[in-house]
Image 1 (tube, rainbow, N blue to C red):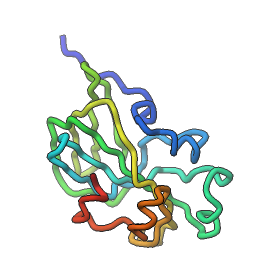
Image 2 (spheres, rainbow, N blue to C red):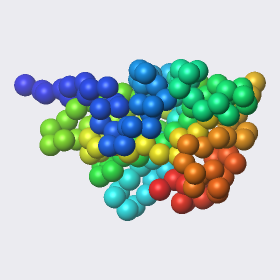
Image 3 (spheres, one colour):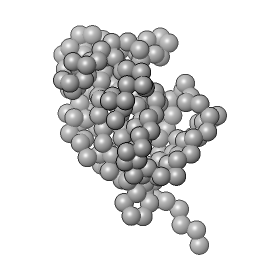
Image 4 (cartoon, helix red, strand yellow):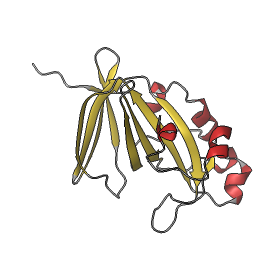
Length: 173
C-alpha cells in the first residue's frame, strides 16, 4: 500500500516567528496565487529561501500610516526552509502567480511543491519555517518589484530601499 503525504495545516502554523504577520493580517492568506520573485539556496542548513508577494494586502487599519500614504498595495516577504533535501527544479520561474503546496511527512518534515506550466519546483524540509525581510510596496503596471519598498525591520530600512539583487547574500540568508 502506498502512503501519500497529508496536507499540512495552514502554513502560518509552521512559522516560528509569525507574530509580525499576525499584527498585519486578521487572517493570513494561504500561499496560493503568490508571485514567486526568487529563491536562494544556502549550503548552511542546508536552507532554501523563497521571496514571494502574498496574494492579498493587509487590512488597511493594520498597516503603518506611511504605507497607506504611499499607496502601497503589495506585501512581500521571505520564507526560509531548513534541512532541505530532495530538491528538484525544472524550468524558469513563471511570470504568473503560483500555488505553493505543503504536505506533511513523517518525522516533522514537509514536502513543498510548486507546479506551473513550464516550471516544477519541489523539495522536502523541516516543518519549522521562518519569515523575514517583510516589506510593502506599490506594484507597477509591469508587475516589477524594483521600486521603493518600506520594510518592517529597522535594519532592513537602514540598509535597503528595495530588495537587492540575489548576489547580496546577507539579504537572502
